[in-house]
Length: 78
Image (tube, rainbow, N blue to C red):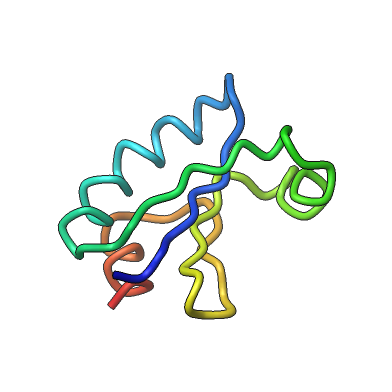
């Protein structure tokens, strides 16, 4: 089962909205989901701090950055 990381931080309203859209799709497509709190790692914060929410399929190089729709998530994970 491929791994998907969801980069977020607490208090991020857009992250919460994006997660509500992304989680059911990720689960339906049988990906493992790892939620990454960007504030826990300075390197991750530097990389994604201005870009969250971000979805990263770990077996691919590209990430999916906000704004994204349910359709965009399906296309990205397909």
